[in-house]
Length: 105
Image 1 (tube, rainbow, N blue to C red):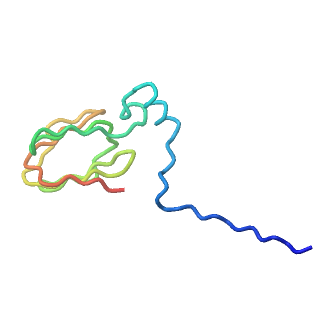
Image 2: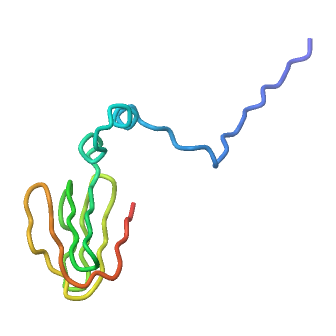
Image 3: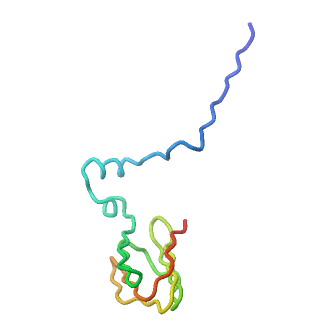
């Protein structure tokens, strides 16, 4: 009897990433994702004030660049005259002339 060869199907790169159970539950019960998934929440007013909630620590701090560590990557803020106006265990307020905001993984 001839043997049949199994053909493995490759996953397409265009497939959507799997959604976690926590993410599904937050959507189902309409809970805020920043609380349930412990992801950062950014609130920006114009280009002068930026509030970051749920951060882990400060990696780099200079008057033209600030890098903040979070659970899902690094937030890089560039501009001029940057400073940390307020910092607590839950949130961080950056002020100055913000010209660029990047998310690095």
